[in-house]
Amino acid sequence: MMKLVNVFKLVSVVLVAAWLALPRAVLACATCYGAADSPMTKGMNNAILTLIALVGVVYVGIGKVFLDFRRRSRKLNEKATVRQRLHLIHGEKQ
Image 1 (cartoon, one colour):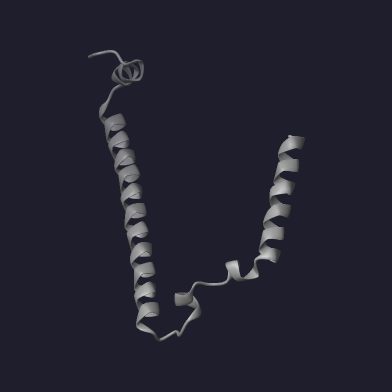
Image 2 (cartoon, helix red, strand yellow):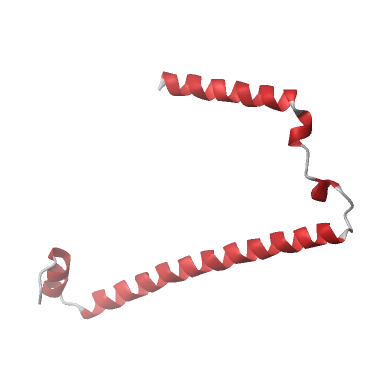
């Protein structure tokens, strides 16, 4: 555990030293640093919003799958008797 802490400290020191040595490398790109009303900046903003929307749609889809699994599991438990549930748990055929 102690070696992991030492490695973390070393990596932190190296990153801070690089940040101080190369201050221009951490500045924003020309598109973000440029004019706020340029077509390139508007296009970049639209691209960012599109990607955020796409990620949101994927998250909603994953949540829907889990809700469907939950609903199906509850429906299966309501229909099954205790003996059938034990067969399902142990993988035996009915």
